[in-house]
Amino acid sequence: MGLLKVIPYGDPILRKQSDRIESIDDDVRKLADDMLETMHLAGGVGLAAPQVNVSRMLFIIDWSLLEGKFDQVKDKGVVVYINPVIYSVGNETLTEEEGCLSLPGINAEVERSDELEISYQTLEDEEIKEEYEDYPVRIILHEFDHLQGVLFIDRITKRERLKIKSELQDILAGRIKPFDGTNISRCDTPVA
Ligand SMILES: [Zn+2]
Image (cartoon, rainbow, N blue to C red; front, top):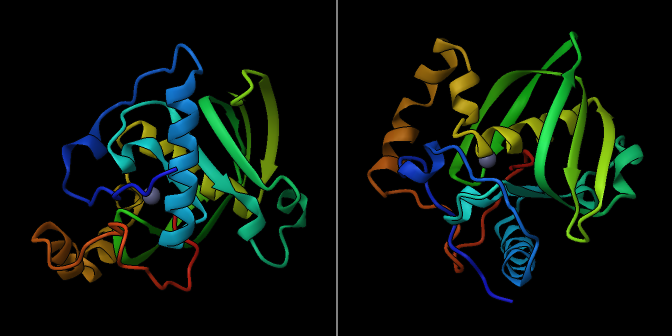
């Protein structure tokens, strides 16, 4: 296992469409292990491969970190989503605060669907189809966006964006850095 550096906002890899994973081999298993270790130390509940400089279709979520009202997913524990496909999204939306390990210190309200159906492969190469609702949907959509080169700040209002302008500049200029193996982050909003 090894710690990975989290890639900051501004790096072009965060804007690329990720490649499909054709074979679930030792490289993929090691990537998932390293991402999990990194995510736990960085203080995130979710992490997508492009955030650790790997442009492949994989993200992880540790559902056990969601406290309180999300008991329907908590028992799932750590889930590795490989080659995810979202084929149905609910019409109802929820607006809540979001954060991202690649944008340390920034939170903003994002409107997202509150229901989805997803299919993905597991590390054991099983094909899974699942439905999610409420807050967990937000985390999945946030991670799924990373695989398409989309960041949560692309989905916020102009007004919200103005509020975080100087923080974005701080990240671009390297004055604020994401987790690099040493700086443990502190954040109240679950970040992904
Ligand atoms: Zn993120």
